[in-house]
Image (cartoon, rainbow, N blue to C red; front, side, top):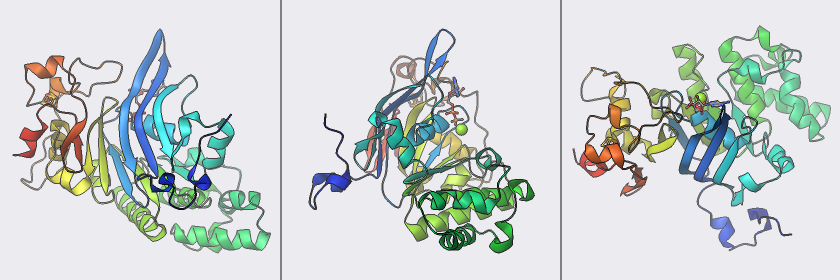
Length: 341
Ligand SMILES: Nc1ncnc2c1ncn2[C@@H]1O[C@H](COP(=O)(O)OP(=O)(O)O)[C@@H](O)[C@H]1O
Ligand code: SF4
Ligand SMILES: [Mg+2]
């Protein structure tokens, strides 16, 4: 039986090496088991993460952002079923063995979460945890210590020589997030998934952690998937943005272009709800209505009950994601109208 070829198998000039995305999410579907059946929480989601690029994944709570990121790292709830493809350097991760997924996790693909306490071991020092992956790689004690100090420093942990001997509970929230970033970087990943990494932090600490993530991304040429319900978080960090609504992609494209001129009324509403992003007036308009959920998705366009532009067609015909301008995709029947405003 032949296994999927990866770029490691490719000779120079092989088309495998020219795959555009480091990660290509292609028609990703995630079904979660619920009483009496399954609910499709991620529905035909498609986007690329090119090397050394930050992609922001935004949308209200419940839109399927975490399940998309968890599918990429390979940590979906028990009983989840997947469809479509997740191509990592050309290899479909959804077909990869559990052993292969484990080997990628923490090494080539690492993840940080909203709650670092959930990811850190309370009984081990920060230094020991950050050094774990290096010890397993067979590095000498002295080399592990040198690299742990360097990783903590890179993550902005002050006085790393002292701090490496501390336990997670001795750190503040922001400092724990830095420790988790150091832990994630220890495997030297090519892609970092960051799911609401600053949501639990106060505003000044939030800004510092975002600056840190951006500088790490730039310095190391990392690719990053930054998941947030907060448009302000992705606005200044992400090169490209994917907007999700009720498990589906509403719109995607370059961040600056999308925020300056959304092609989907949902993106428009998100932009208008944030005073710092909206430039035309100082007033913010909260999003009207309540978010549709994957379990309770309205027919036609799922956004139609909240959409100021909705017409009869929107109630019956589901808009497909389509190219609406160079580099821009949107799932709205009337995207061109919005773009011309
Ligand atoms: N274990 C689960 N079983 C069933 N449904 C779930 C489970 N976890 C999350 N969901 C549902 O899946 C949808 C997507 O959730 P999630 O990806 O966490 O959204 P987001 O990260 O955008 O807030 C939500 O409607 C949520 O209620
Ligand atoms: S398809 Fe219709 S309801 Fe949906 S976003 Fe576009 S205009 Fe609004
Ligand atoms: Mg989430």
